[in-house]
Amino acid sequence: MLDDGVLRLARLLLATQDIALLAPMIKREIHYRLLNGQYGNVIAQMAQTGSHMQRISNAIEVLKTNYHKPIKIEDLATQVGMSISSFHSHFKAVTAMSPLQYQKRLRLLEARKIMLAETLDAASTAYQVGYESPSQFSREYVRMFGHPPKRDMMLLLRERTIA
Image (cartoon, rainbow, N blue to C red):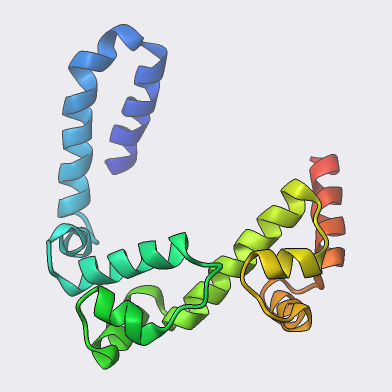
């Protein structure tokens, strides 16, 4: 049912004369289905001011914006108004990883994107995304993507040309 609403909303892009009238109703239906669906309580908590879920969501936004900077978890917890232990446990409950693991993942995903788009070498990219050691970057890159950065780029570029 939810995907029907999303599909109808997307189809409105082809019928621009109907957007003003129908889009608000379809969006409202999508919101209704989301809130009454399997994860409705989670979605509602994310929007609820002051909830743990909303605070973790704010922390995630801070991490996304500042992924390349060193972050003290104590400062991040304080910034979102939580104790360190509460912050850690709620963050892990929401993301299935610690805040530092989450930041590492953001850095590695961004590094991969940069190397593909700008064809930078691994060492330069490592520094750009906040790593202090290119060798540490390479080790963590292999752990996450299964190949060293240079080999991974070759494989991804080859996939692009085939597709």
